[in-house]
Length: 167
Image (cartoon, rainbow, N blue to C red; front, top):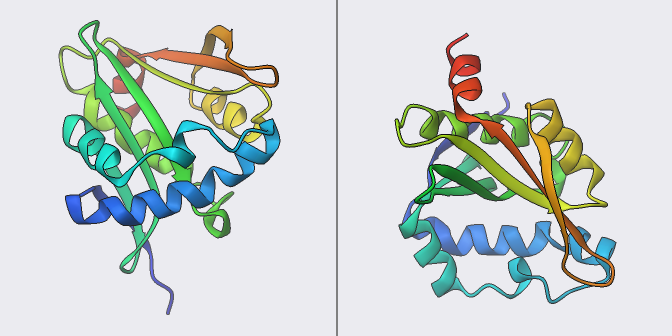
């Protein structure tokens, strides 16, 4: 009998597991862009713990193992900034990233102050772009941050997400 993946709020004791998973998951992004100095690979445990405390983080667990995570926070403009959606490489392409994205949107969609969802990814990260577009995100800007990396920012209206969640 197989175990199912459960999604729940991240606790402080999950931070170290999330950081290790983040390091593993961002190796392919670093390789794709030829830059192993990207922030997800250099973030400290203290910074991650503080980031979790300042916003909202979810973890997906298979038994006791953290196999995926996502973080978000709402800023003063009502933008829920979704960040670091990560899925263990062996768990990718099974819908877990989409489930986590839906769960973090649902968490914020009910808040009256949330007007939009926003996230970003690298311009060559086709799998990420495909997932975000399939969930209704549209590109709103791009910024070249290095010789090989352009960040694409995507958004979607929170009301549309709330409607989809209730359907």
